[in-house]
Length: 76
Image 1 (cartoon, one colour):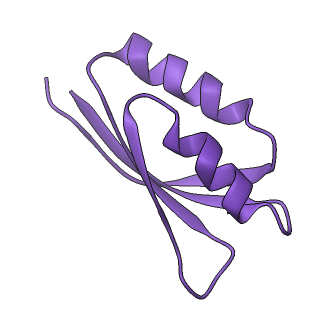
Image 2 (cartoon, rainbow, N blue to C red; image 1 turned 90 degrees about the vertical axis):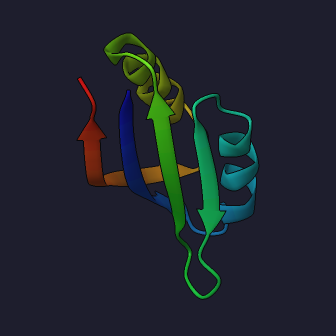
């Protein structure tokens, strides 16, 4: 199991729309910062392949400026 958290920076004015898109992704939960244009994702995948698919889906979302890995844990 791989658990990672990310800070997600949306394009200006796109936070709410990007959050809705992320909420539909498998393998993660998203929380919006209350005072910043920032989202936090916690992703939990079962395999390296699932993680690769998750990141591919995340990278293809409209309104995404960039994201940064905050921490990761891999149980093997």
